Length: 162
Image 1 (tube, helix red, strand yellow):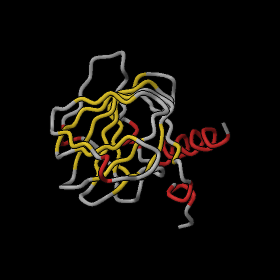
Image 2 (cartoon, rainbow, N blue to C red):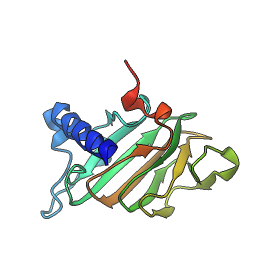
Image 3 (cartoon, rainbow, N blue to C red):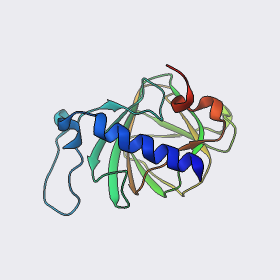
Image 4 (tube, rainbow, N blue to C red):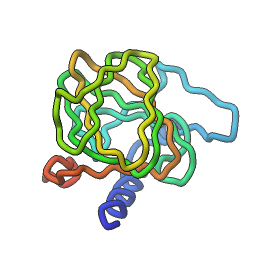
């Protein structure tokens, strides 16, 4: 799929462009190590709206291996309908995580999940997010490579000219 190749190339470029400290953030999944909350490095991610931040905690999301990332979405921010090719397991770290299932953005379909909730999202399931009541942080576990395709390319931040 052409858009997946574009995304994977963009992700690799992004990972090489972030600073060395951030790359060290992706702890190897086969060795004992740790990261504490105060040492998490948050970066912008080209596939998300500008204010949304991503932190790579374990593994390399660009490779076919297990990875764990965190996503921080500020209050009021929307992530429009999209799909991921990989199966995902979300854990809500803080705030209220609102997710809706469907290929059209519809706030009436949003479900609220509190801190500690675990959500299983099969690959290629259309969904959308809203930070409706406050900032939220989710932790995502999946097996890469990470992918994201917006159903309406108009909402894909990677395609907007800066």
